[in-house]
Image 1: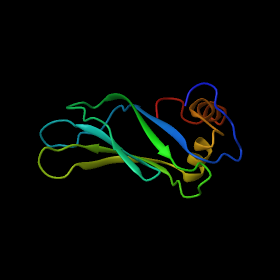
Image 2: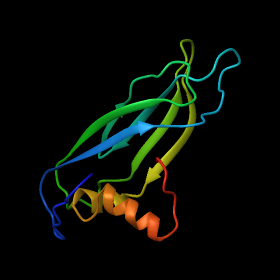
Image 3: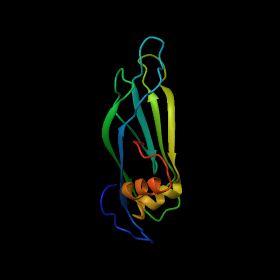
Image 4: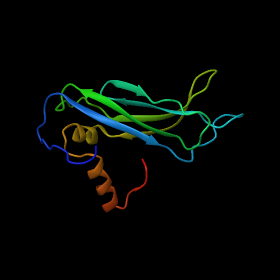
Length: 134
């Protein structure tokens, strides 16, 4: 979320949360013969989306926006945001490379407009956290 964010401490009702999958860097070699064909499974609020597969790259760029519709921003059942980085394989199952989870509490704050991407980046900077791409 960029720019101004509408703040509603007791937000209720439907909302739409946009999750942007931008890029990854320095991914590990996963296949014996080849590099990695990464994609992301993104799960939130009962929905699952997949990004496109980027062939043979250790530094993929997706720049994909995924929209999650939430029935009720006040629901305590929103759950966490899970982004799982996968290696696509033509034969057999895709392999898990890694995962990042944003807590349900943090995602409730996002859905209610309490925090957005800009605010979170500023907080991380103040606390000495990671400042590069997530």
